[in-house]
Image 1 (spheres, rainbow over the protein chains, first blue to last red):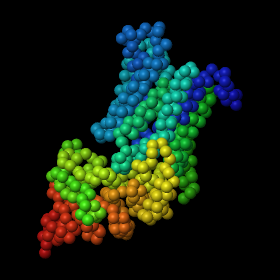
Image 2 (image 1 turned 90 degrees about the horizontal axis):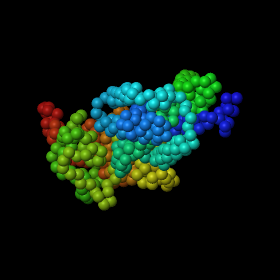
Image 3 (image 1 turned 60 degrees about the vertical axis):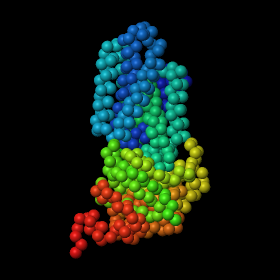
Image 4 (image 1 turned 135 degrees about the horizontal axis):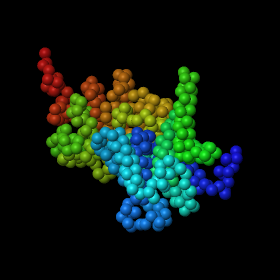
Length: 291
Length: 236
């Protein structure tokens, strides 16, 4: 109770981090459910990693080129990271989705290769940039960093755009995902709808990676939808259960991490994993009793 | 009466520039019941998908009514759908009206009522509230036909609707499609392997065989001599 009181206090130092984490917890499952439905789960793993490579590139290249001096980098660090993360996320998801649509090569092979090359590239880049390495490693470990009001507002605004777009165009995005042929015969521009969905996924992933790191990002993209799918009876329930589970797990995970002085990201993802395992077991039990 | 609905003019169809069929010229008359027959890999589904605009033609032209544009009610194979989607039969049928609903707006009550009518017409109303993925093959086909009818189509285009459906349900399904054809004067384009059903219900046949196309009425195409030629057998 004491932890809860502290975390909810308006004077709490990491107040903005809690808000950001919860926002990410609510928003990520909303796009993650499309990755699950389209059977692009590996994309949910590779994309945050590629996005964090974008952060590494954005933080490293200007210093190498001598455009920016390390002592001045702090001012523009967040903007650079945002640009790098978003550009890499969007480029990766569009290229990977295009190749998937063209059925070129083995999908798992492409995503696995993208993941491992992105991770290795990040390490290589940062090994030559001590300044960027510290911040990036915090991001990788899921350490909560202090988030200022401007960053919180930017994150909330970007996620609001994603949620509003998903709410407005849910019908079309679902139709194009479920039955592409039907969508074409109804005169829908399936490529445009695919691109919109991928842009929304890319934007959410990049905001999540910047705020909470790739580990939590892919945890929240995939585990809440997978858990919600066990119990939901229709798409509306699937959407609501996944988003609410993500938001609540994010807040509870933060409180647990704060109470026991643990890194926030891993604490939240392990909590999600435990909930998923419990839900899986519970469903089996319910089904066995129903027989 | 012989108003052409679909006219194929020197059409070449296939995938990634590799033709499956070429020099295809034929006409499908408005209000006709046409069966597309052929062995596996003969190009039946490719032809259907090309007519629907799902696959671009490699060459030639497809002439369709432009003013107003032709509306196709497409009925894919029931096995084409991923069971991960938590959609009821009614949710799937409602997709038929998506083409008429404005972006970001809810589906108007009159369109919902129309979908209910379509479900009733196909005998799918009683199981429409069940999960689509959990329905039998025949039930799924009825939902998919209801969805196609909900598009207010000029033509129903069915891709092997009886695949994976038992014999009794197959008979019932084809009888129902015939009834729709007669009552609503719909043009029917049906891909199938089932010769007895074609004899019973279709008027026109397009038979794809080793890159050749035979077209004509059922009586003209499905003669014992033609069949013997196609199946390479001798008539006793």
